[in-house]
Length: 342
Image 1 (cartoon, rainbow, N blue to C red):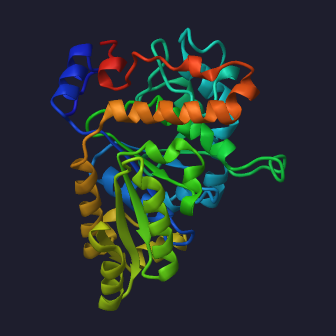
Image 2 (spheres, one colour; image 1 turned 90 degrees about the vertical axis):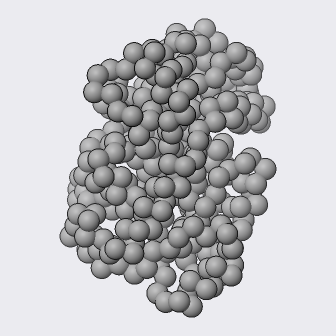
């Protein structure tokens, strides 16, 4: 359902109650498996089909902008979420009385009454500062290590800005939020891995790549993460049989070698319609999977609170000098009704 005008409170509640699906998607996998390529192809596929797409590059190797078609110079000039973290915190906290200052917020701080819930395609100071249009996709990047970071900071200090934003992001029917995650099991260093409706693990037909899948699946199992595997770099039937044997029913689909992808990697971007038909079919399967997955806003928020309390006890309380458990609003659940003030 699409609304040409700004939706009213009753519109948003109607959409929510009718079960229209909202979609947050992550692509993960072993380094070099092709997850950035899959992220860019899926984002381009959705955008080319007329869907609004917000993408975030949260990988330590920031290549998503180039994969979408930006030049190296254009990608290097993009603003970053990490450098705008104070702005992000101050905007999102709004007038929530449980959050005394932006400085008291940490990457896991959940929204509550008075917080600003944001929609992925609205105009606000955060999106104006941090996001740019790249090939029809609204793109934000976490940012690479700077010289000042080396030896003194972990990359999750950058990714924290994205986690905080996702905690406050209320996507609506027909909108897609797509993230290129850090490689391997690094995603489990925070609660970020629970922020998605479906997580697609990109897997090559190799034992090492399958090993990453098994590790990810084991860590994710206790948190009811919806995990599906997309095979990549498949060359023949033997590769397919290997993936089926190793992954079983978790194998959703697979992509094979692509001249379209090779052209893009050489700086000659082509329209997504030029992708090979069997690879387009795989992207359609990915979309149908996410479209069939409903959002559980109560679970989404419950897990945000769980990881916030873990981080508060582990390091947040000491750093902030206050008990960050007090930031949790026990009567609040995000989602379209909360956005509308229901």
